[in-house]
Structure formats: structure tokens, C-alpha cells
Length: 530
Picture 1 (cartoon, rainbow, N blue to C red):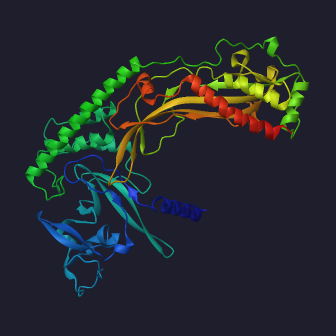
Picture 2 (cartoon, rainbow, N blue to C red):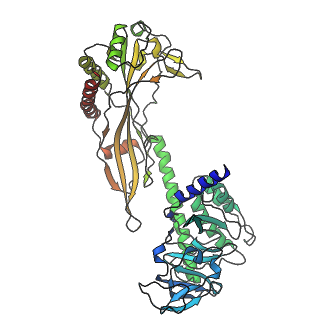
Picture 3 (cartoon, rainbow, N blue to C red):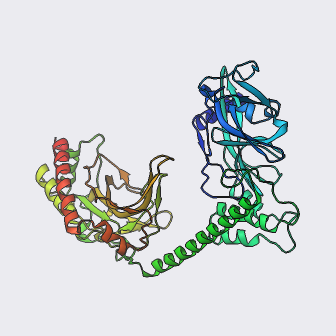
């Protein structure tokens, strides 16, 4: 059993890390910020000369042509023992990394003589208390990528994952996931021993917990706070923000720019929060629907059951409705329509779509009940009966289930089969990002949908839960033409969003749904009228 569990865990790692791992690096930080946080080992490039540079212990940057190598020679426990292979020329011909007699070999540079090197878009550095890793950013709290070599049978592969470290403390993050929110909060709350007296980072974490900015923005602020209040030895950043060798003037300029950016972002967040509060107060809201309002536990004589239903196994649909009719009972058609909301939880947004803050709601689509009335007429005509009947739920009694909640009491009524036509109209408003990392495109997108679902149920005596039966008729839906605008578009209230979407009127939507539903009902009748 133990071996099976180990194998399953191993297989999961293969699935998780079989493709490149992305670590989004959207925020500037003091010191070096990785221009690329997507690491992928390229087997076919091993030995290929590439432009790069290495940084000596004194901070001097040396441009060099470095041969690309396997991850274990660049990072990890074995990396310190493997020197950089420096080439004479940049060619498209690979070199033998262990052959100093190769015509293109210039020299070996030992890792003990340098503190970092750059090749193929990544900065590799000897991180204190950790070892050689791929740097994502520098600072009191810093992040790096750890690469681990693995082997299964004869196949060698690599997994890589993000780790976060506070100074020289034990880093957090594993192959199963990055640092937890709780542990990152603890890092931001720490007061280093070399901080000037009275300096306190507690306001940073308090601002995050108050929702003023994200946790990663708090991390940035903490790094800036440490640089500002460090009283003994400042952090020896490898590189400045521009990817150049660090100089004091560049470092100070970068810090000032970072502070200005965060201040501007914080002000924008405050303005946005103010606008959200105003939207909450001024948006149009429809009354919350209560399907049990005004209903009783007593069934009206006009809707009471004529005869208890005795169900027949494997009974065809037409035989069933004929039996229900002969018993003096009916088949109900119920139309349900929710309020029109914005970005409901039922709508699926993809990772490249960011829902916008929009408040408010409208009443359900006016006149949509007509679909139920017309469907009942069409079914009665098509099946040669009068058993189908559109019914308003307000005429159906309710009962309490085992948890004390109200539910429809269909068993007490003459409706022995219920066909539900359920409509969920809503608006969406989001910013969508398309394209690749070299050419991203962002735009605001808004649209109206009427998503729908149909199903059939029958009541079971003594059982609170309804039983789903048979295959219902297909149900019509609707979607408007999308509204597209600049990604900076801000709409926070439903009454401002609707004119942009410019959907059809309720009457037009109902007409469209009726026309489509007629076609679906026709197919349903043809299929089951046997």
C-alpha cells in the first residue's frame, strides 16, 4: 500500500510539472526584478553559446558568452562545483562543456569567484543560507525558483517551484504550492534587529487586512520600509531595477519610483473603494424574490389531487400522460425566472477574464410566463390531449421538510408530472486579456445572457425530495452582442451598464425565446408522441 501511495504522488508531480511553471511577477521591488519568471529547461540547447554576463564578488559586471547547461550545473547542491563555460564567440554550434580543448572555449569561471550570472533570461545567484538558485526578486523578503532533478525508470525530468525567504531564515514553498498567506503575513510583521529605533511595519500589514492593497503589495512596501529604516548594513543588491550593475544613484531612484508607484496605486485603490461605496448606495436593486410569499400549506380545491398516482415502471411518456389524464390529474408546466443580476456566481469566468465591480439588479424578464402558456397549448395540440397546464407556483401549497425549510407540496395537488422551464437572465462586465506575453491586449467586455435549463420531476409520497424523471424538451436561451471598450472603462451600477450593452427589450427577448422554444417543443412532440 505504501508503494502505491508513493507512486501516485510521484505520478501527480509528473502531471503538475510536465509543462512550464509560471510565477507572475507583476510588481516592482527594490533591487533586481526578474524580467522572466517562466523557467523551462531546454534539452536541445545544452552546450549552445549564449549572450550573458557574470558578476564578480566586488560587483563588477563582465559581459560574456556563456554555454547553456543542465539545471543541476547552474543551481542546486552540485552547482558550486561546476564552473561556467565561457566561449570565445557567439555561434550556432554547440560546445562540449567538459572539453577545454574545444576551439570555441575561452575559459572556465569558477562559481566561488562570482556572486551571480545571467543567461537565457534568468539571473542565477548564490542566495545566502540557500545556495545557487534562480532569482525572482531581491529584498528583505525575496523569492526564487528552485529546480529539482528527478528520474523515473530511464527518464530524467525536472520540477521547479517558487520559494519565499525572509533574510536568511528557512524559505517557504514546495512543489505542492507557494508560501501560505499566513506565513507571508508573519514575514511582513517581523522587525529585524538592525532597524532604527521606533520603526514599525505593523501599519503595512494592517493596511492589507483592511483591504487597502494586496498581500504582495504589502510585501513590496515591507521591502521598501526595511531599506528606509535599516540602521546598520543595507542589502547588497546584485542588480538595479533596470537590469544594470547596481549603483547607489540608480538604487535610490528605483526606490523613489517604487514609493511613488505604490502611493499612486494606494490612492487609486482608495478612490475605487469610495466609488464602490457610492455604487452600493445608489445602484438600482430589484426586490429579492420569495417563491413562498403568500402561499399556504392548504391545497385549493381547484388544484387538489383527483386520484393518487400509481406509477408504472418503464412507462413511455405518452402512456404516462394518458394515464394521468384518465385519473383526472394534470401535467404542470412551470416557468421560473430569476432577477437580472451582474456577474453572478453561476457564470464561469476564465483566468484571463477579470470580473468588474458592478452593483444592482433588475426584476425578471416581463411576460416570460407566456412561454409556459404557449408550450402547454402546443403540447396539448401535439399530443391530442388537454392534460398539460401552465401553473403559477403561487397556487401550489408548501410543506416543511425534515430541516424545517419550505418546499413545494406537489403531492397534494393534481399535478403528477411537472415540467420546469427555468431562466437565469444576467449581465457580465469584465476586463479580458488576450495575446501572448510579447503583445498583450486588454479590453472591457459586457454582455447580456439568458441561460436556461429544463427538467421534469414527480412527487414521491412521504419523500421530501422530488424525483427527476424522463427527458424534458430542450429549452431556449439568448445572448446579446458583446459591448467592447477600453480596459480602463469603469461602470459600477447596473443602470449605467445596461445602456452600454443595449440588450433587446423584454418583449423582443420573449418573442425570440418563444420562437426557438416552439421548434424545440415540435421535436419533443415528434419524438415522444408514440
